[in-house]
Image 1 (cartoon, one colour):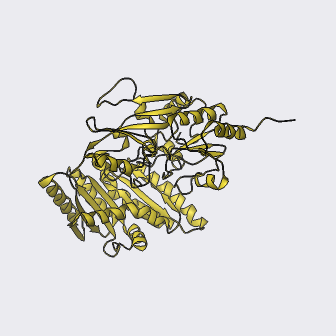
Image 2 (cartoon, one colour):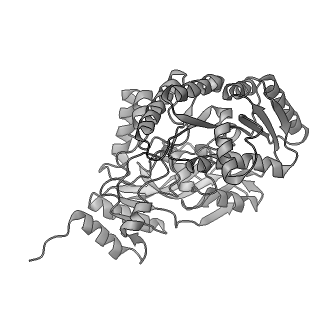
Image 3 (cartoon, one colour):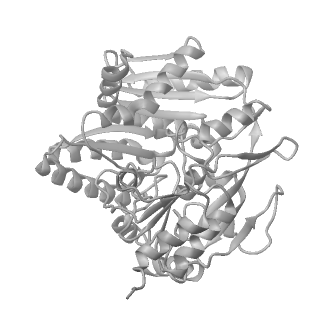
Length: 463
């Protein structure tokens, strides 16, 4: 006598039958590599299957099958997230957009691009550059992270101090919602206020409201070469004072990044760049103002570096030297990962509070006996304390988690937010509850219920 297939078996069987060969993976060894993103210590489970569609219709088919079987769907891009937002939950299907990699259109006249969600950020930037155009959002993970993931988390980046974050460049998108409907949101025009901004609502929703299958982003003309300056400081607090002074002076650099000695030593040990021998903290500034205006802005930044106590401040001699300095900034996180588990914070405070917050982070590290490295998009107050623990040291891990929570407390006390660009995911759910009023959280849950009434889209994340 035959018996009905278990729900979990049934949905996987249906997906295998409905999709082209190779789209559905259920090998346990492969599933393990899709079970979590790069968030250290965020909980995760082995998914039932991983599905790698190539078209919007295939994404819709996956969501509809999961809807029929009430199976959770966890959207995933490149898996570079740092909040657990792409982590598999028990009994879930991970929907990976990694094979949706087509740049569908570049319209130079309208200054827009239409891309599938699996397009890597730097690949889009390279294609745009060939036509004299520029896509500004540039998270540190830009060589690996995808546009879909950037939209899902509203990613920021190095140049967002002047040019804004991903939300500022999303015009529209195609999405599969929690009812399995494939819909277009937003617009292609430079302006448009028809109805509620549902496309904007999707940006930063971390896959809880829909699965993005296509994104239309606006572009800018290519920039003139940037002027890069560097300042060496004896403490993160002094570097923070330089940041606050630059902001108070009304300057808007195209980048203003902080990297401390712990990060520099890790990068040196890995890539032998020799930076840690010269500074405890490096502050990197850039100006993309054209011609003499750029020279003047760079000189003004250097003046504020020196006034804040920089032991050395100078403009990069050439583009190669400038790129080496910013390469160290981008390599900091993977370099630190080589030392042991890294718990990554992502708080944002008012720019005037940057020196105070950096000082508090140092004190929190001392009080909890936790090594905390600091990198930061300092120009917009977005700080990334990196809490490092020895492999297998459970007491150190507990201390680091306590320090993590205390950093959130201090950021909120200074008028900041618990996440500037990494998202809430799993790691910051309690932080979100501390930051936002119950009435506001209820409004967000109501939106979630309206667009995903059966609760299958990335359940347990954010709200």
